[in-house]
Image (tube, rainbow, N blue to C red; front, side, top):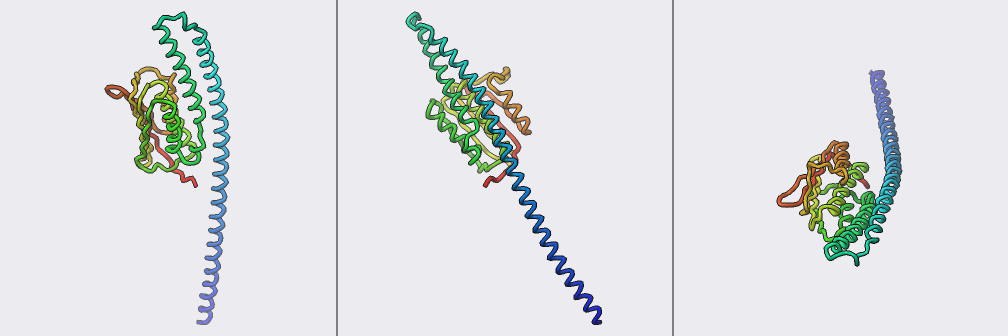
Length: 253
């Protein structure tokens, strides 16, 4: 009887210390996993920062090339003596000067907002607000942004890619649509991010090859994220752009 009791006591003690050991081991494993997760996030952020630097470098090269071409074009136009033109051609001359100036300003503004700090800090909706507030000041296009649900934050690289799509779409509207207003709507349905941009501009031939406006690039980018990018003409005028992408949520503290 005593032997049995002593055996039970010994088993209980062993069980107690085994439980303590397991709990301590689990705690250490959790700490190790947390450390590894933190390190992985640091590595991920460092990689994205490096990619962002490279994106800015490549964008700067493209911007310099475009600016050089626009500067050359403006110089050629300005070389024309307006005094030698009739009234009709004088009007065309002035419009050409205004257009090249406007396109240069839009390109510079879009370039400087390619990867804004507000995107890193507050996400795609805040970054879009910051962009259109600057465009509204410089141009006659009125932007209205509506966020139907709290969009939150996504995985960092996806936020960058989505913002590039939104940025390029706004760029096309400002430069080509001659729109007086643009309604931008953001919403999240389950794990799907949906953005629409609707304008009252001149519309476009959606069946035509639009590589020059970067549309094929945006379609490709959306497809790579498992989503879609499409444009439809509105009646009597205007266009509506749809961006639908499955998202991976990421809480950025």
